[in-house]
Structures are given as C-alpha cells and as structure tokens.
Length: 339
Image (tube, rainbow, N blue to C red):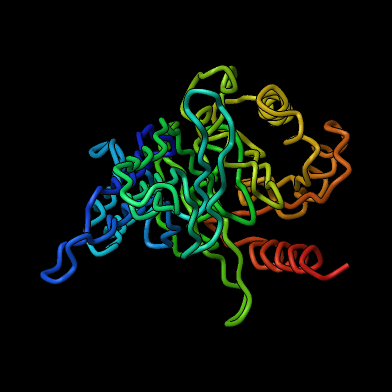
C-alpha cells in the first residue's frame, strides 16, 4: 500500500431539526393548547483512532464527510430524532489541523480514541416552549442551527520508539530487516525505500520496541529535495534516533561528511531533532578486518566529536545486532520508568 502522510478533507456536522407550530386537537377539547415539539440535535463528525490503518490513502478517494441532520419536531411535544454521528476512522498518530488557519485541533494517539472535529447544530424550539400566561396560543418556533463545517488537514506521524536516519544506501533497510520482521526492498542503488517502514523489534517474548526507517536524506532534503523531506516530520515522535552511516562507502565518499550532511538536514528542518538523543551506528563493518574495527570506529567518533554511543554493525554478518537492540530496549525502559 502506498504511504500517504497528509490529506485534505472537508467535514460538515449535521444541522439541528426545526421546531414546529402545532396545537392539540382532541374531540372534546375545543381549545387545545400549543404542543409543537423541538427539533432534534444534528450529528457530530468524529475521528476515531483505528490501529488497522497505516496510511491516509483512503482520503484520496473520499474528501467530504457529512453527519446526519436532526429530525423536525412533531405534535404532542414530540422531539425530532437526533442525527447520527459521522465516524471517520483514521490511523493512530494522526494530527488534525484547521486547513484555513493552521490551528492544531487535536491529536489521535490511541486506538479507539474519539476526536470531535465538527460539532452538531442544536434543535430549534417548538411553540410549546413559548406558552405563557400572557401568550396562550403562541405561533412562534425557531429553526435548528447549522452544524460546524471545516476544511481539515490530516498529518500522520509514525508512532515509533526509534527512528532510523541516514544517507541513501547507508544500510537502513538491511538493518531493519535484520532486526525485525519488516521486509523493505534492499538493492545496490539509492532510494530503494520510498515510504516509511515500521518494524517491531522483539528482544524477548515480553519486551519489544518499534523501529521506523524513513527514506534516505540528501543535501537539500529539508527544502524538498529527494524523498526524505516529506517524511522528516515522522521523526518528531521518536524517543531515540539511530544515525546510520556506511563506514566504507562504495562510492568513495567520506563517512564523516555523510554524517555531517544528514545532521545539516535535520537541523535545517527542525533544530530540536539535533538536540534529541542520537546514537551513531556504523554499518557494513564486516568489510573491515575485525582487528581494525575498533580503531575505525574511534577515528570516526573522534573526527565527529561524537559524545554519544557508537556501534559498529553488519546486517549481513549479524555483527553487534543483539547488543544494539538490547541496549536500545534498556534505554527505552529507563525512559519509561516513573521519575
């Protein structure tokens, strides 16, 4: 399925039903009083978190969502039927904005969570409401009010614990395949990943975390170049970022320069991303003799002045994968502990 992380829709809540003017008519009651009932309330438009959905692709085919209007009032002070809500399933992780003002309306973060995005109109009053000692035969009623109507923008942010970033062909897809059951495309050309990939990394039967890979970042990604730009927002909810770099690139590029390039794009898009916890993960270390690996990693960290954890891994040879995932799990568990 194609990944769609933004959609534009219009929502319209139901209008309230009208109140009615009606007088009681009974055989032996020649002067029956007013008994016009109120109109029913309209229906709301409600977004509902659905964990079975992974993208916003359904909103490409349906753009308008309208709740049912309320029924009109009736005689004998009968209130009109309330309109049914329009429930719209959305993926967990969806943010909802007013498309005209840019205001954040709400955030759907849990399965089953309900977010009302357009409120229904109220029902109007029937003439029974206007009866008084001085007005025994009121012929007044009010119409129901209109429901709210908005143009909305939906944005989907992946709810992953750990984000995997790096240049194209840094080995991100190979790593997520090796750590989880996710099966992104792997090939020897850039941009094999064209949509975010989620994988569940299981450390043991009762402990796991979610790892997300976004498409590779190139220079100018924050301004729209390449494929990674539109997915940089997906990193906003990750608790930890793994910055992956090929320690011995086949194109002869400098690993240090590659790390700096990715950092520059993160900082250009959102400086807070650089302030987030990041671990440096050098991939494809099986291409370096085992006796020299530690020296290569120390040299890389030294040139980068990296003060965080540094790992050397190989998805193909299985080097250091077990230690990496256990350390990630421990880090996440420390964060989850009550302070």
